[in-house]
Image: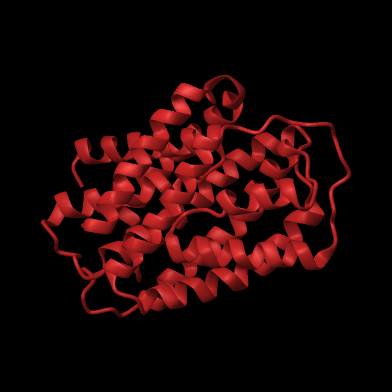
Amino acid sequence: MDILAAVLLALGGLIAGFLAGVFGIGGGIVLVPVLLYYDYCRSAGMLSLVSMHVAMGTSLLVVMFASGAQAWGYLRANQVIWRGVIFVALAGVLGALLGSRIAAGLEGPSLRKIFGLILLVAAARLFSGRRKQGKESEPDLAPLPLLAIGLLVGFVSSLSGVEGALIAIPLMYTYLHFPLRKAFGTTSAAIVITAAAGAAGYMIWGWGNTTLPAGMPGFIDWQAAIPLILGAVPGGIIGTRLAGRADTPAVRTIFAVVLLVVMLRMFFL
């Protein structure tokens, strides 16, 4: 990899981490298109049969580190509920392994359409506006609802390459009465584990795939992942700290429109 490509990937990771920290919708929404474009430019379609698989697996690996950076900020602010983390992460690991196994057996166009639907959900959430933090309430920490959320988050995130904050935060806030910032913090910490499981699944199920370049460990592109991580970690930290100031209606609208354009590209690629 040349220096320019590494710098551009690091910049893409920085943007992904920052937007994930600000909006809480998942850095994978940016990472997957960046990785697809990188693979296309690098090899003119060398990975055309499995490029989406590689993009999703690598995205989850980067998300693991980016979410860790976000979770650290919330942990320092005492916004992480560890009982919630444990139950969500436990079920999330199972969901992530199951989702990555199903994804490994799907063709690229099918995965692109699944990812496009996730983009549509993210855009709709951005257009709906950021919810204000209401009065502090006592969160519902019953095991079954948390396990159900974790299973859904792990499955959807590994099937789309996008971290599960897009799903977990609204569910925890609306149905389990988590204060908004604690929903963000708890989800970020749990996603470190579920994203790791999803990335491991993509590595395992892709191991020995003959369409991959020699030396690639399953559907994980470590060469691209390293600069993306180096950008995503500080991006996540900065985004989390600036969430209140950067999350404005104008920025949300612009980002939502960009997501819709990318969604159309995924459906008609």
